[in-house]
Amino acid sequence: DGGITQSPKYLFRKEGQNVTLSCEQNLNHDAMYWYRQDPGQGLRLIYYSQIVNDFQKGDIAEGYSVSREKKESFPLTVTSAQKNPTAFYLCASKTPGELEAFFGQGTRLTVV
Amino acid sequence: AQSVTQLGSHVSVSEGALVLLRCNYSSSVPPYLFWYVQYPNQGLQLLLKYTTGATLVKGINGFEAEFKKSETSFHLTKPSAHMSDAAEYFCAVSQLTGANNLFFGTGTRLTVIP
Image (cartoon, rainbow over all chains, first blue to last red; front, side, top):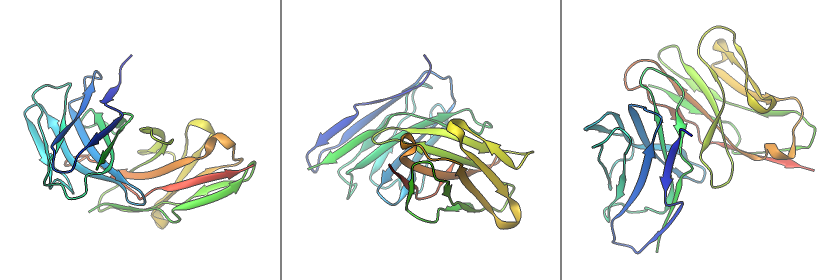
């Protein structure tokens, strides 16, 4: 079945540690996105990538980094510079020029 | 610039009652509008979308929405609420130019009272 897989579903890390969230898709989509979700704030765009080896900052990129070495994969690293990293992170993908985005099941990151 | 405003962060309805979730948008170009649903600790699932053509759009699970350009609105409705409709609903706007990104509202949590 085609889809987007985010792993792990739950992640706990100590403050000051970098952590990488995985996002893999087999939908053959060129564009991939990372969103952060906090209660009452909706979804905010962290980074997006329209094509392999290229990515752009979204609205809240500070403290995050990404790579796009393969079409299928768009990992997100939450660095120690992110002041408040505890949140629900959602990955999405779509074909540029198409309207519908498909979402993964999310990763809930808790930093203690 | 594009933005979405969802009025009411929480809405409660009785089972069998009308569901009305409000969404207003701002867009400098003709918008494409979406409603997504999210169940607890899950990703987002597309309910329906408006691109062009008929302004009344039907989606999954009995939901529909009407695009009203004069009111810059895209409210989501369902004639009769079911317990399984309890979830969070997000309105979003996009355009087929530029980065083609989705801009989301802050969401409305729907509670269905038995």
